[in-house]
Length: 220
Image (tube, rainbow, N blue to C red; front, side, top):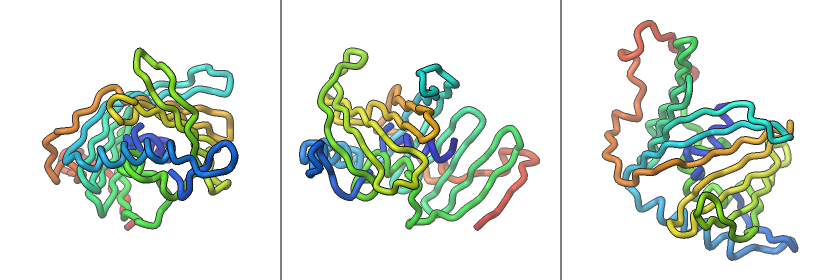
């Protein structure tokens, strides 16, 4: 679930490929233009806090589970809270807290890792890992959105398609959908976003004093 969560957030619904590829195998400049606009706008925000819904379906469309959460971002820092789990990152260290076991796993940020973090989802992760094309406009909940279809360059990835819906009016990511190789579908939707959130650096650091009896697994 953590790997799938990072595909979205990170929350980052809003956010993919070194080169854009259209339906004829050529670059899709319109898709890149849309993604670049989303990235540029997101980078102008000093602090972002958003609520999201993560929906899991099987291949037939049957809902297997629904989770709600929040994601906060400030520069290279992020914090994700979702049912039963909290993830903190201060830009150098990642703390993943599991509520059911009262255990936190501590790891170092690996700049070379292929994990899609919240910042990557909302900024320029499309510049490295995917081929993408614009499928056109559609109406979703009275919003006009632009659908971008993404295919991972690395065929060993556990998913084979990612669909990003960009709100045409606000130039922000509205939702993301990931199709994994087992047939499961993960849909991430941004419910609301505060782009002027006053977030302190301490907010992105796990404070074990607030979790009595927590077991620390340090993998740094």
